[in-house]
Image 1 (cartoon, rainbow, N blue to C red):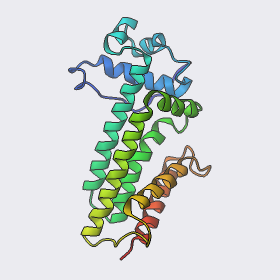
Image 2 (image 1 turned 45 degrees about the horizontal axis):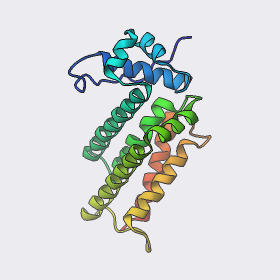
Image 3 (image 1 turned 135 degrees about the horizontal axis):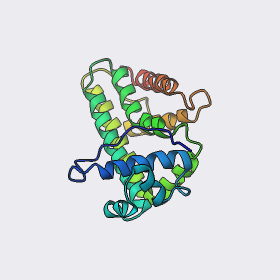
Image 4 (image 1 turned 120 degrees about the horizontal axis):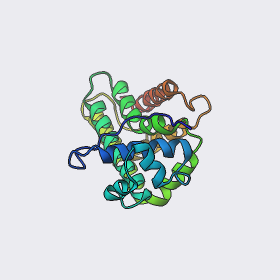
Length: 209
């Protein structure tokens, strides 16, 4: 059965310019998305990547190492997308929407239409619970810094009475995570973007001067 094509992964610099790790990770991502982690074998990955099985093991210790390498790549992509959103022109709502979309849009683009998403989330939890937690914390800190930068420039005031900026960010994260599973959003990229914008408007209105 043919697999769906997904966003290509470019890790050539990470592997000294070799295209093979890139092909292996891209193939693995396609297979994990369409068939799940457990049903995907190293043989399957090698076959789709058009490399020998021993070549996969030359670059990755096992299937879990391939999965974790994909997570590292996605984390770096999120950082780049966040930085671009922070530098972008536009209103505070535009930039906060971009920041939210940079984080929640990445996984949505890759996995939202996969029937194996629950298994993939379980695999992330089992193989990389601490790393995923670190990425979440890093992103929450980034959101908090962004909101404080808006306070310093006078674009917004402080958080609602009784709340700290970190608490506002925590609430925002939970709302954004929930939006991904909303029946009106599920599988619809534009609907997710609209929801992220609505959340940005709500948060900034709550912190209006």
